[in-house]
Image (tube, rainbow, N blue to C red):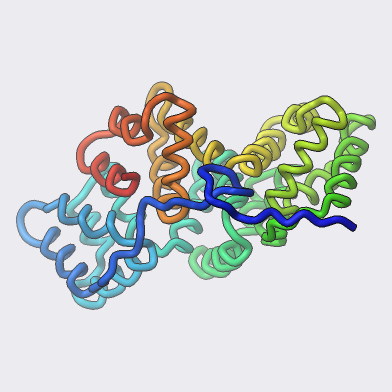
Length: 331
């Protein structure tokens, strides 16, 4: 059996070879008491010093912000309640998001994608496929305690198979997280996907679900490359032909993420901004969830793909303190 170990090297962009570049790093030295006091001073009394709120919440990591929030709550009451009394609109929503731990933030976002009328499938896929097994486990635990029911039960009540089955498999967090590629398994998966799809009447859905929800992303990219070389058809075309609507879109998203996650997230950012109106909640989630990991890579990819900086695109589509807060996280 032949194994190919893909080592991480410095290069912008791909899952297999890219070094993640965050735009937000932990502040050091960190003084949560001083930060809590600054927030209280920004909120207390007549008028609200929104720039001071930004100077704290947008320059601390989620872990640090969670400590600040706990400190504020112990010393001054409820930070969220005080923000709600003093702020409004998108700046309030963003500021409130920034008071949560990352686990709480992602749990709420998963709930929101399903709680509102209609399910936001692209957002649901994005969150579940881009989190580690450990993060998914922590989200599952928090979700049950916070909402009184499991994430699994909410997915089951809000989606239908085969997309539902695929989401449930991803939510269980069984994905191989190594960058090891077994070429024998790659070849086996390519044959299985062909025989379970284009070569037969109908589609063997379980084959696609198992491979796309459990294999590591470097492996999946190798599968896509070998599939096209063997059968002359991009695997991304196959999945959208074999599966309709959200399932086909989810599998295509996995393939794009596997090939180059910075490009995938750039396209997600572009979708939130392009056209009439802005999908503000998606824009906030993407910014908050990626700024501590790879938003630097995403900015490079965005500039290359769309001919303008992500900062410029956000500036053109937002305003006021909401805009300044987003740019603080992005830049």
